[in-house]
Length: 183
Image (cartoon, rainbow, N blue to C red; front, side, top):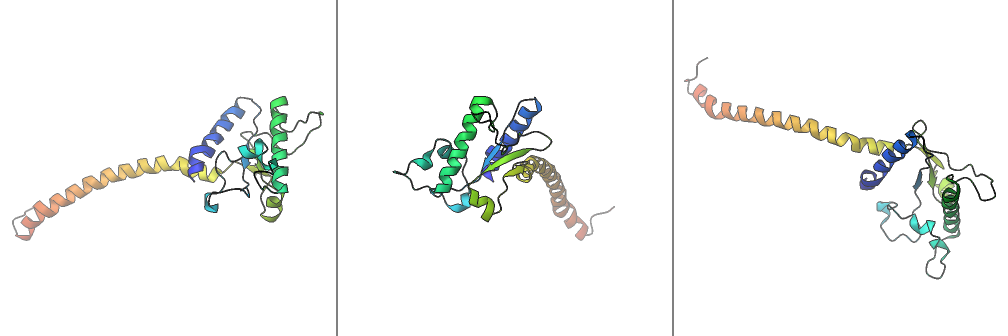
């Protein structure tokens, strides 16, 4: 959840603004938990962890023991990035052929590509193309400041009520119980 707050939600806002100004925008989520991951599983996939795949670390067989599928994911990632650097479109290959894997991101569809190994799509039901990356989580984070504001107002009202109640209990109640209080 902290990753949503610190990274994903901000990237969502940036991608939306970028696409609304007419720029070609391509958004990805890297969701593969690598076999070489040293962090506990509950931490999920950490921010920036895809860098190892972008620079081909899975092919360094002398130092690491990545799987064949992870090598294929790395190749796909490198191809997307090279195509994007060359043409501005990750789907446009050097031979002018196209891969239609990665849809452009825009405010209507909010589509992004989910980059993971093939077996994650098959065995875990991961979607290749998603919409609105972690949108529900980001809506939660947008709601928190409103909730704090509302509860702050309630807090002030409660404090005033408590002060009035304390005054009534400490000042008026003893007089009333003693029969000294009159309306």
